[in-house]
Image (cartoon, rainbow, N blue to C red; front, side):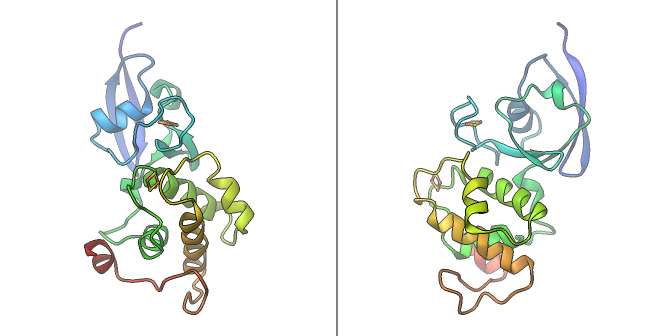
Amino acid sequence: MPSQIVSLVVNGEPREFIARPGVTLLAVLREALGLTAAKRGCAQGSCGTCTVLVDDRPAPACLIAVETVADCSVRTLEGVAVGGNLDEVQSSFVDNFATQCGFCTAGMIMVAEALLDRDPDPSEEDVAEAISGNVCRCTGYRPIMIAILDAARRRRGESVEGIEGTAPARPAEEAVSR
Ligand code: FES
Ligand code: FES
């Protein structure tokens, strides 16, 4: 089958490229578009480190033939921060030490974004269920769960001071320079 022109909306921008049939969304994002936040881990749909949002739903980019999502909206970690400012989920991951080696972090954050977009007040069980397809070898998952619950409170405009297991939000520049 010949290569074909495929269109996607990536992080709000229309993108068009030539793709061989069967080439994965992950390969297109990383190699054609230079968006390398989504990582190639297992390449079998098991680890979640390649997770992006396709039409607002978490999806394993390593398993998706790009022509099957033509004209869809794709959101990656690169599209989360706005104007150089970390969003609530990103800043909460920093403040709650929810990332160590960082290999799982992009996937975890995209799963969290989707969860909080559909449920602004998730329970601990909801968070555990949401990240159940994402593997982290470093953190033991607890800091990630705390960070996502903390991010939910930040999005709801609730103070995080005095809540056990949370850290106060810090400006993005300070957060990233630490
Ligand atoms: S790299 Fe896609 S699920 Fe592991
Ligand atoms: S922080 Fe290392 S795999 Fe999650």
